[in-house]
Length: 194
Picture 1 (cartoon, rainbow, N blue to C red):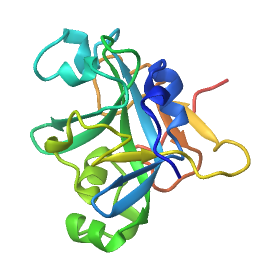
Picture 2: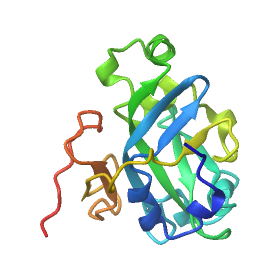
Picture 3: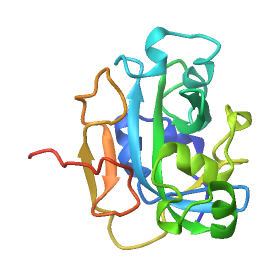
Picture 4: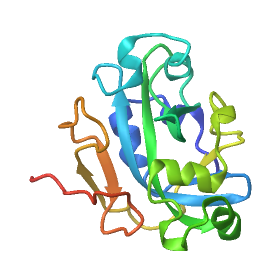
């Protein structure tokens, strides 16, 4: 599987977020398939870029295909993929992975059972050893790399739902999950009515 090029991310965040489902994140000898994402855009108040360009948000407004890693609640580093053209603040939060490689390293870092290694944005960064030092790095060349989906017939079944863990713009259906996947974070997604 080849690394996704920066051009993949140079599109609307709401196109990129569901298309990352099924891609693989690699870092420090461990990897997992993306099974859950959330989109964030400067136009809505849950996005860090909503406040404009600051030292913290500089990466969000930078080149597409960069890692935006920030600390949440002073505890967890969270991984995002910067999207849209440079100057637009938008990113996809990687919310959950299905572990596929480096399980011993993941368990050592997380101290958790295999079924719970990467079922949340803070859990997956801990399991893969991703830290604030990875902020601004290129997702095509590393150290954090996102690889294209493995070649299979058809696209994965993706459901959309409202985002979780936020208080502003929480009604937006910008959460994307692999359908019926046990590795997604809680609460489990409730698909939107057609």
